[in-house]
Image (cartoon, rainbow, N blue to C red; front, side):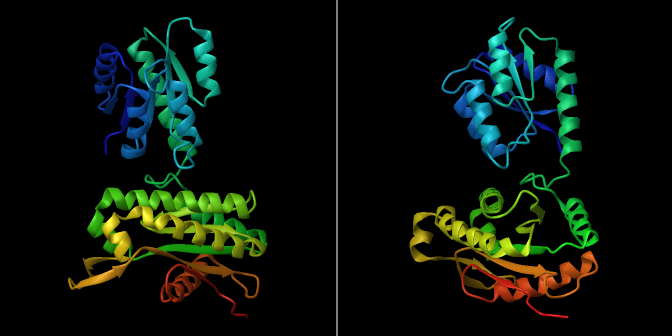
Length: 309
């Protein structure tokens, strides 16, 4: 898959130079001509790096950068600020807004490509992540669970899964489905930040499956916050007609047309508070069991495994 680089500049000549330069490395270019357009493209097209002109209409590079770095899922996106020659204050303001690097116009194409390669390498090393949400993926999840087991400390692992998501994806398409997954990730991050502790961990297993690792005393508050915020967000995923009906019509896995209720979230919680857990696979097995029980309940819900040794 080609690496996507967003360029935002109101000068068509600069955009052309950037496109020619980036084509040397076979980068896929997303071209925008002002700050508002750039911000929309960042959310819609998930670029791997952004090149922002400091001075452009509607929103300047600094404002766009601030919006990107403020978003829980986009803050890892590398940003290079393109500034005018010798304008020190622009460079400083750009870095203060969260830019990862800057380059001065007129720039040397080879230097720009070297800076881009450096930032992309750094982003790849820093983030073994799910490409859709930028949350840590399976390797990091296993590492985190292993660390908890080896430390012999008490933990709770929340397995988070969306209900009726396939029907939604089939009806609304993958782009809308991807946005639901990204919004779910934001909800998990906010809930954990507000109700959890700094040591908590959030991972994205894949698709609509997530993991939150916390401590037993915080797990109820985190799960309730996730469910409450998710239920508030659900209506915004649908058009007016489906929202009013409260369901969509789609084919099930056997190809039979059915009515599917609006998406909900199910959480199965595994803990070593009342039982001994010795390996990562055991956590996954218990989590799958408890999550299946939670999915049998109406609307969004969570179930904790309370079985004792």
